[in-house]
Image 1 (cartoon, rainbow, N blue to C red):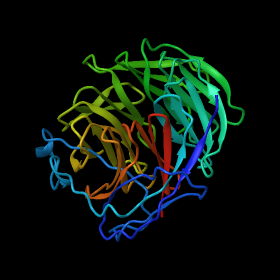
Image 2 (cartoon, rainbow, N blue to C red):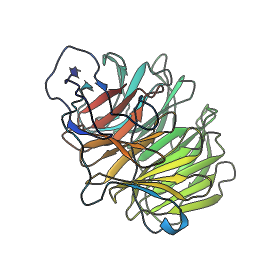
Image 3 (cartoon, one colour):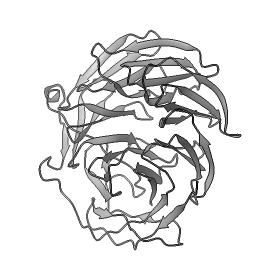
Image 4 (cartoon, rainbow, N blue to C red):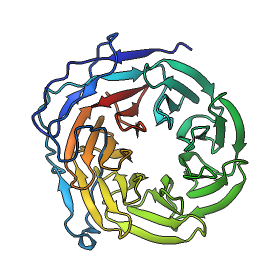
Length: 374
């Protein structure tokens, strides 16, 4: 199968406001990365990041909740601020997962064409295509040391790969349905998987031995899972409107946050452990105080379901991707919209930040685009 990569470049214009919406360029160019330069911001000028969603039921529990935009009339600033992207093409289906390696040198994609692809993150060159033999790759995650890559497949299999050789280390089976989300514990000793069989499982990362199976009380698919920075707690979300917190050792549910008006689609825990962000079919993302469960900010702006969400490495920004084909960057504490990109022609399915926070990637049908913020 022929693989192709295309570098898209557009002229960067000055941005006079803190947020902008633009279309990614559609013509190929042999030049390199594009730099996204934002207007003056309260934090710093190196902006690489996404955003969150919205909810009401939990509002009384939070004080001083910041809200951005308007769910009916989202603000769009100067669209003349053009951005360019490195496009990683050649996928024969929807890209469902994307991740940068911990050293930032490679980028891995999972696609429903049942292929795992490894790209050079700086040039976009395809390094390796690996058949996953799992009826589609739905989730990918690197270990913190970068030596292992875990993938979750449509057939419910968990596979762990050696990143230096791209060889399979082991296959673990136990889910009765597709794996929707996957994460390594910070110490690299455990893997957590969420599944369409309504369960999430903890595994030994060295052997693939199942350690524990947990589930929500409802019968909804587990949409996303994540560890907190010290690995003591887990956060999970499903087709309901809540965010669930678990003791990762005992398996006991210790808290739940209520605030979304629609199914929760994604979740992430900030690297400093202070915040959790969740995305939802209610067209919003919510930034939560991880200690109290209070709402820090509600992020309005998307005009369709918010499908993916993550934090920047320093936790100051949130990145979201939506079924409105946009990726958006937000200030974590204020909920202020910093950037909006008309990134793809179809739904954005996944987003990821590079370890240095200077780039982010977004996946959609047939492609991944890598954006640079400087």
